[in-house]
Amino acid sequence: MTLEELPTPCYIIDEPKLRANCALLKGVADRTGCRILLAQKAFSAFAEYPLMAEYLNGTTASSLYEAKLGAGEFGKENHIFAPAYRDEEFDEIVRICDHIVFNSFSQYEKYKDRLKGRSAGIRINPECPTQEGHEIYDPCRPGSRMGVVLEEFEKHADLLEGIDGLHFHTLCEQNSDDLATTLEVVEKRFGTCLKRMKWINFGGGHHITRPGYDISLLEECILRIRRVYGTEVYLEPGEAVALNAGYLLASVMDEVKNGDVTNLILDASAACHMPDVLEMPYRPPLKDAGLPGEKDYTYRLGGNTCLAGDIIGDYSFDKELKSGDRLLFEDMAIYSMVKNNTFNGVGLPAIAVLEDGDGTDRLRLIRQFGYEDFRMRLS
Image 1: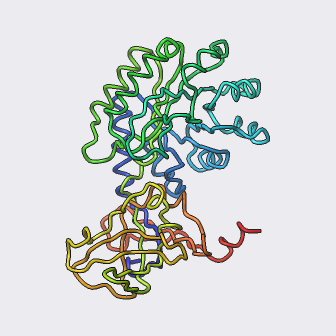
Image 2: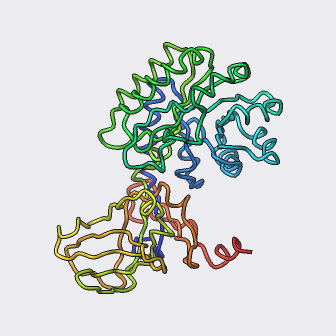
Image 3: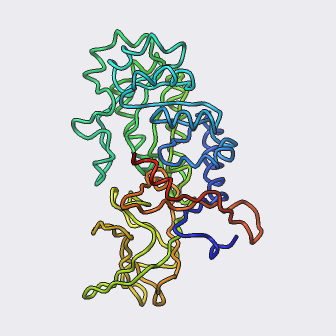
């Protein structure tokens, strides 16, 4: 199948790029002895789990359903963290998960007698913010509900006997210098306790597969913690696994002029198909396009919903665009398929795979969605 033959909108998973990312991560694991998990909250395309399982040590989940997906489709280590667990789901979580991380000591105390030998961890909040401009993603923001701060940690020292590991997650699309900064604070505040732990989980947000990421500093951090404390080290990146490993193919539907702005209505929506464009916010890369005014023709690209702010961004092109023209948005594997929705009754994009190999016919359509996928969620 060719690109022109795919339906639009359509997510396309780039298997060669996905494999390259996973191979890079495996290199880090091999050189340091750490264990790297797929954070399914960023990328849950289970058709690719057999490929990723060749390189990664397992998965981590944020809910029972993600845990079931990891257990059933990935089949290796299966970790879970949730801000709170539902009582009626916990026994099934215990059955399918190897490591269970609690967000508070009250949650641990509630469930500790039902763990049946599973490895228990507690999420700590080092209160060390390193992010700028993304407060919604900062677990160290003042008053955060994510993790146990030192003051509360010290009050519950008597409960540590059954805890095997510490977990922290403070980063979002960041380099290893921010990890080093965070680790310094973690050691200062929780180092005495860390010596008693079997493992520590550095969480996610490590942009390891991004060009320019300082892998050597990351490896120094991992090796030092393993050497000083004798603990197993886990990382659970999501973005790094599938960074730049997917696309969203869209078609132009109409043109609407308003003063100096020429709007193009697409069959792909920021609100429905790439929510991080509005939530983050960010401007997704678009193949063969430039910044506004950089090329001869500038357009504002928007989705086919009633939301006035359903705007993907302003882009310029070498030629005029018309109805039926196709656009290929890049870096659309992460936080797109897992967050998409059917607002306004807009359909979900199809899913295709760009397979490994050198042949010309490497695109394979693996899933299409219809009315029942919209209807089934509403009553």
